[in-house]
Amino acid sequence: MSRLNFASALVAVCLAASASYGNGAYGQGPVSAETPIFTRLVPGQELSFWSPNFSSSTHSKVLSLTGTISGQGSALEVKFDWLGLDGQTKFSNPIVVPTGPNGTAAINLSHTVAFCPERVSVHLRSASGTVTVDSVFKHECIIPEPATGLMGLLGLGGLTLARRRLVGT
Image (cartoon, rainbow, N blue to C red; front, side):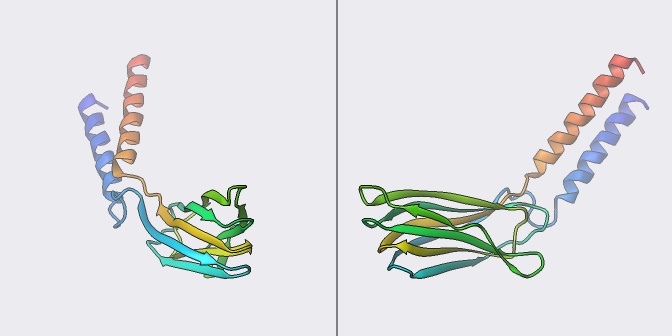
């Protein structure tokens, strides 16, 4: 194969790969949404914050809750859930965040789901005492940029070309 034909084939492959990214969400980078949460929970009280979102079975989703809690001697239980590919609700393991000696604590929790579910939520429950929550629930579907795939293909093509030069064919 001449260098011109090889270069043409490489460009065609890159263009085809780039075109395959055109199913709506590709090229947008991460698809995310944020829900600010400011609430006070009494002992045993639970609140859920649901959010519909972009759905994809081929990309992962990161669910996170960041912020602070306050309340002397209190603790917050957090769990994430999502709608599974089978239509059933799936749950993360619950995480309990106690307040420190000064009555406050930082929250920086996350859970990764292997796909971008149609619906996600975070559940907050006072595990002990009255707890004030000031946080943000964020969910982000990780979608590669088209340039990422294109650069990978170009790199592979360059390695192939370099190997051909070394072998002398």
